Length: 282
Image (cartoon, rainbow, N blue to C red; front, top):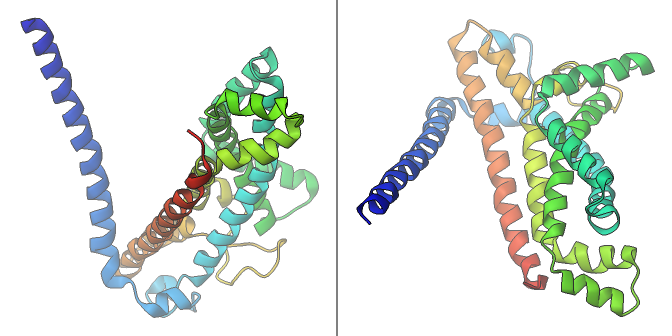
């Protein structure tokens, strides 16, 4: 009895310590970004593009990076969603536990862990083969490849949580597998799918390596799919690389803007998830 209590106390201390370590790291990171970025964050920085000498400490802003990041992440997430939803439905409603499904899941798990720079290099090779230059379209394609395994595996797990009795009842009423997927499963997994989309979007908007070679960088607003596009992670990288303290402080302000965008998306997702959860049968 004493040994069991001792083991329980040890593991409780380890769990509390791990929780404090994770939460403390998060607070430290956010605190650093807010403390160093908030003083440099101005309205002009948000609504203006970089002007001549911006990286030397002169006037301008990061509007090009904000718009470019939103274009890249939104386009990449939509493209990945169009490809991942049919794959997830096929794995659960058609292939289920077949060898093909298990091999596909294993492949997706491996792809999930592949560094983003590899996706960037892969996208760059494809662009060279197609004769493309660094562009918004190239960045969107690279991010779609990056987000695809995240979306498929998250959706796969979400669809697996739908009660089997609900799907069997749909089949018993004469519905096909496709009708069951679109009218029953999709509605039941709405909140979980939103979470998966947000997870993929957050990975896409915060990634720098995959768009470094494929999307390039420009001080102008993106006006074409075939033109280069800036992004907030690269804006942070380039500003931190300058020797000017004022520009380095703007890098933390750029990181703060990126954090606020992700936070706003999280809040919007939670609100939508609560509304969609009313239709979910437990």
